[in-house]
Picture 1 (tube, rainbow over the protein chains, first blue to last red):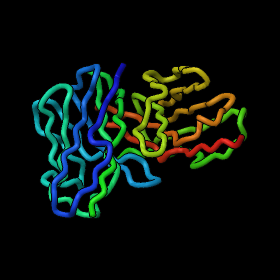
Picture 2: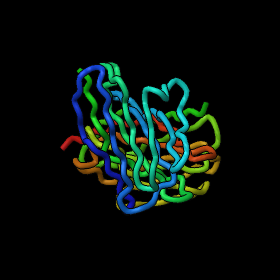
Picture 3: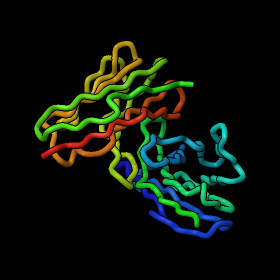
Picture 4: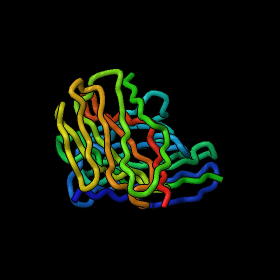
Length: 115
Length: 110
């Protein structure tokens, strides 16, 4: 149980284009989903908290107009990197929490490379 | 903000040896979680701890939630090559946001 998927697993795009990443909880409903970014050899950095049916809460320093988050259902959250630039290249990982639990289950991550 | 200090930063051990790593916090945590991350993949939950003093095992892994609620340790007994990876502690101090430790990279020598 508690499986989270992400799609795509990797993406290469040109500078200036937008990229959408999907995060799905496959066998549970997730009221809350989280989006993280991870640079090589570093820990995970929380970007935003996504609550179903409401606006996402962004961490300090994360541009909400740059990283658009939509949590339209209890099993799906999307992160759109708008007008991507090379510095946006990173490993993006989502997680989901079942119900009221504080435990988070992570997706396999999406590797983004912006040329 | 909350900070988690994780040590050691890296370990290089012989197969069959026991491993111990720990996390300390500058403030009280309500939940401690231990994850393992393989290269290019997302973290996988190993053990979740919800109560001070709790000692929980998962196969060869054992983790404890410190009595002070400011620390936690993870032990791996009889390490094997597939234990290689980066281990992260994480905790919540109220609310549902996780604070992650800096990670412990484990390398196992055959």
